[in-house]
Length: 61
Image (cartoon, rainbow, N blue to C red):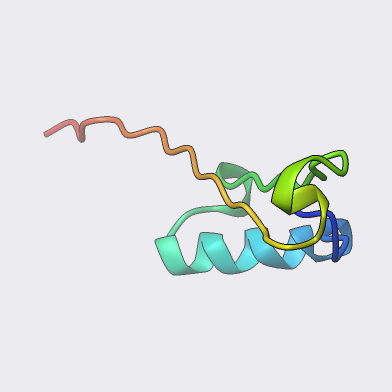
C-alpha cells in the first residue's frame, strides 16, 4: 500500500520474481497494489505498507 510510486506497471515482474524464488508457477502468485486514499502516514507519502497472505497445505505422503 503506497500513495506513490505507482506500482501497477511493476506487478508482472514482481509476480515472476516471487514465483521463481519460491519455486512456484506464476499462476500461483498474486500481487495487488493500492493507495491509502491519502489517509495516515502512508497516504501522506511518509511510509509504505506491505501485507502478505499465504495459504499453506500439508503435503500428501
